[in-house]
Image (cartoon, rainbow, N blue to C red; front, side, top):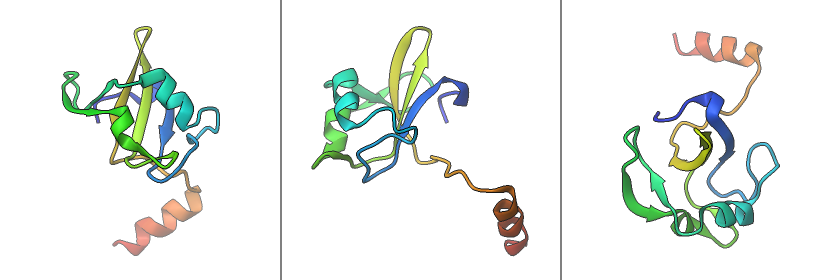
Length: 98
């Protein structure tokens, strides 16, 4: 992953209109990143796809992460958005996979 977790402002899971924190929605994402390209690696490279390309019918079509780094904001693709779960479930899943 090319961002640090402590820099994360919001995460958007594919198919949703709201961020994980519920503070931002798709319209906020468009206002913050209108036509901005999505960062794909730690070097700031993009693949030419904009944030606008990742929004359809008022929801995101890719998992996205918004970060705040050095007084700038960036949007990243994320294939690793963590879903919070309890320690009991983590323990259970750990032993199921052994």
